[in-house]
Amino acid sequence: MTFFSAFIFPPLLGCLLIAPFLQHTRFPQKILFLSAVSFPIGYGACSLLLFFAYLVAPPVATWTTLVAGLGIMIFSVKKLLSSFRPTRLSFWAKSIGPFSLPKFNLLPTVFLITGFLLFVFILIRTLDFYSLTISLNVFGGWDAYYFWALKAKFMFRAPAEWQNLFSPDLFWTHPDYPLLLPGSLAWGWLWLGKEAFLWAPFLAIGFYLSCAFLLIWYLTSTVSAFTGYLGGSFFLILGPCFFWAVHFYADVPLSFFIAGATLTAVIALREKEEKLWRVSGLLSGLAAWTKNEGILFILSFSCLLMAILFFEKIKSKRQFSRCLYCFLSGAILPVLAILILKTFLGTTGDYLGSGRTLFDYLTLLFSGWDRVLLLLNAYRKSVTSFTLWRGLWGFFLIAVFYLGFRNGRSRYKWVPVGIFLLVNLGYAVAILTSPYDLEWQIQTAFERLLLHTVPLVLAFSFETLALSPNHQ
Image (tube, rainbow, N blue to C red; front, side):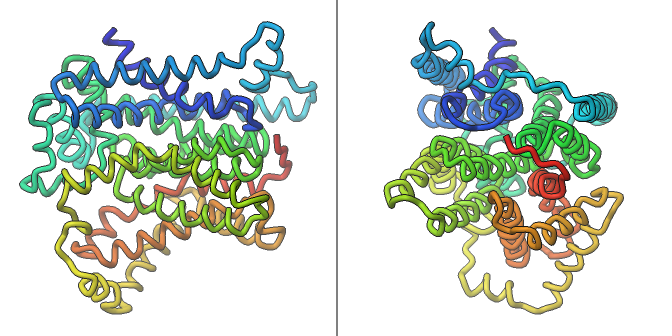
């Protein structure tokens, strides 16, 4: 039961949580998608359920969460099987998603095998280097040990007094921060019965590899399997992504949810499938439940989606409202958890609850062009570093120009670009109005802020610059 609850239950919950929303839709490569998102969504859902259980009954929160999760799984299985009939087996199988083998073609097969072997080789080397690195530093970086793990220890050691983790005395832990990582850590510790020091590395590698699998799913669906493996391999060789994963920071999980929410929305727009907005909404909500930067993302994402839906040729206001309803219904639980946390628990922060006025923010924002130029210079230095990003931002710029010259509105490929611009504009405003020293923020946090949109930028660049699109 311990092994099942800690390791198997969350991914299984994540899979069954979203599978009903994919059934009987034109969503491409469903099995690949489920394999990519089950781990992050599962542990995100467990952290949410654990949070609500602690609010209601801390002493029995672990079992309450397990029972609630099992209830969700039973409901999902019942919904999946409700359309099953022995006489409709072939139809039901097609709804789970494509099993037909493609016709044999030598050149594409050679490319497919080459891409697969390349990905497997890089994956093995990555796992080997990861295990070596964590053996030297199993506790991760400063944020991992003194920030996320500290919050999880309150939930594990003293469930009845868990709200002490929001104490203003622990100001360095940012009491107003969302609890996806602490909740995921606490979930494993509670079921394993101890603060297992390898649990954080397990979560970190799970989220990290999920980003690569997400890219494989999307690029396989929109271009080809070879491009998918190439995109996944490229992600695994990016130094900053591996560095922050091996230090157990929350930035890699956030980058997964940002990319997952956006790419799922792109598929929903292309296929005109309302149910898929629930999946995008859930991923957006989990992004907000990961870090404060995720709250900025869901606000930017919601505004962009409303603008898209408003200006699209939607058949009726009813359909417009239906799409928004599906998106919001998917995001409702994470957003509700954040509202409770910000309003009643973590009421002090760097922005909300800081006591600063609008005039204070405007003063910092327009305090001088030297600060803006310093920030722009930081962007320039980072994106031009081939050592860090392997030319990713150059590919991205080429892809943006190529898309603009070809047909910028084709199949909603520009949506990731819009998210990238909105999110980074929001980050720039947040940095300029932060109470902390600008140069210190650039040195300690700037690279991680760029990382948040890396999987999304990579997916956009590879899809746009691919030579042989194969939309499935």
